[in-house]
Length: 287
Image 1 (cartoon, rainbow, N blue to C red):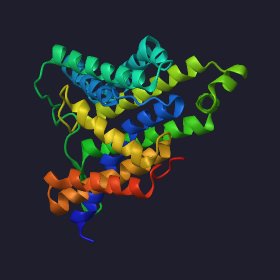
Image 2: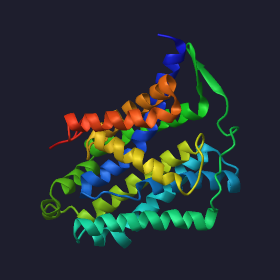
Image 3: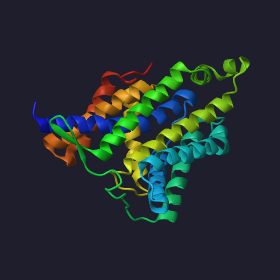
Image 4: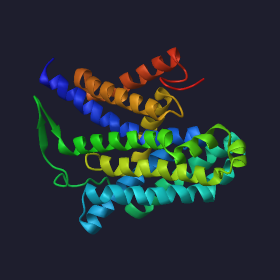
């Protein structure tokens, strides 16, 4: 196997880890509340703008941008839950779809109004250069993003499966009424879920901003990636989102290397449709 192909695979894994991170928030919300958040990509976009503001105002890099983005987006997620989501979940599914779609438009056009339509990028010097790893060289910004994203995704899974808070959240996901009879407050757990999901998007956005353009419309592209990742991995499964994110990252990078970057999305979506045709619940989803 050539060193070039190994580098392509490594790049795909690092990119896939970031996909998995911001997709895990989407699957967490679905698993907790059976709500599909159409504003998910725009939360990632706001995380990217937080990183941009941290750099332009504070002169800080990822070390400052990542925790600030996580805090800002977690707060926004909790506010959105209490102001909007808690109310629309009492209505029909159409109200939930239109409500989160309206939230996406509000966030997107607020960003257009405040930041303008120009594409922005962070300076390469924030996380510059490449690192030699064996026979390959990896961009420092992508390596940082991939490693941090992988660690945060694993920590999110451990929080859900190995802590008391996670047990309470899963209890609410299984049966909110029964959980309330056991002294668990569903409202509080669902608000925490929205905060965690939004924090994950903020971290992902702050990491992506180091090697991707920042614009109000970028949320549309990232939302499609998130929905494909979650559908392929299985709605409600964080390990599924991780596996699907890594797989999509590899397929995307190998396709770009083998047949050209312009065709990579065709290959990804073709494999996505084929996988769901063979297993409609996704790789790790439950019927």
